[in-house]
Length: 461
Image (tube, rainbow, N blue to C red):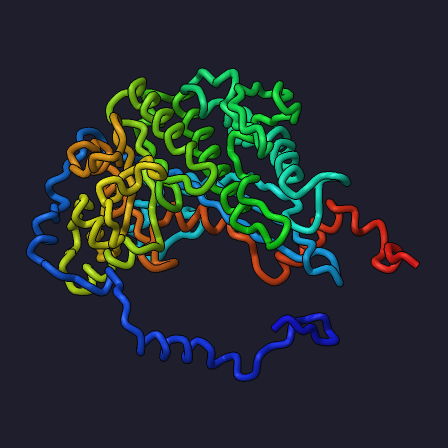
């Protein structure tokens, strides 16, 4: 409720704990369609199922997995001013040595030291004012975000072994080719009455039409999702997704440059979530697909091995229903063609599904131990989705067999249908609750300069 109590918290409605039960009871009285609950035409579905034995790896088994995961949080940082919000985002990479991990399978008890030795992690963190606070006086919230993102991308580095590049350098690399970063990036001028397309170098430049200063990070268009009212958490989530992609680009390129014949063909890169970009930065989807396909054309065998793992969403719900009804048995792979997509998404144009957002194709796999996994896999040529239905056939994905093999070898009980590399990356990227959020408040207060003046000193008398 909008009323505040003496303590500063908002007044709670009486018997608030019954709200969930009440909403569920009301929903049970309504008629609506849930695709994940409607498993019709089982015979047609079973015809789209392939068994694990149909997919054989063409080379040696992968010996390492590198997972990338991110998280973000928004915190109130000014007592008495709940609209002042500060945001934190971070992306972590976890490198897992599968050989060390598999030595523990033969042991009666797992050796924590060996597990720790099998995993190496790295982390990049970002923070910025997201609402009610600005980078400087005299700018609106969109300009504040644009300035903050540009500054972060110039100063924040991904430092792993011999990789030492800023996020901005990786952004230009993504717009170029492996080993050949772009000189400029295409920016649509954010001024509402201008919207001119400009090629912007890393230093930035002034729009020759409206004279607005353009940053190279404006190519992300994240400021379009920012508003003066609200928490702007969705924009922070978009920023986190971009950073995850850049971490993936940086680490994959490092192996491509340093060990193209050995480590790169032996490593699986995993993104926590689908191989997709949503919202204003969605055009990076095409950049990512083009970049990794160029890397594939210059790498021995089927490498690089890249996939995303979805943990939530309608396809995951549908997959678990198939497993629950034993339609999908251990070792089975469901080919998600146009018909399956139409069933799950209830879309009128399922053929064009994903063409604007995904750079990998969805499959549904039930691991040999019963876990249900929804991986998205990149094709070495062409688009996974397009206006004509894309490439649903598993034969167009030569990395698929090796990916499924790693999924079977790295089952985790830390969460439902989990795999160990993603769990390790998540453990590094997640923000701790309780004391952790208190520390974030302290950091934000210092960054905003709120620790240099008491609340009362700013009151106009």
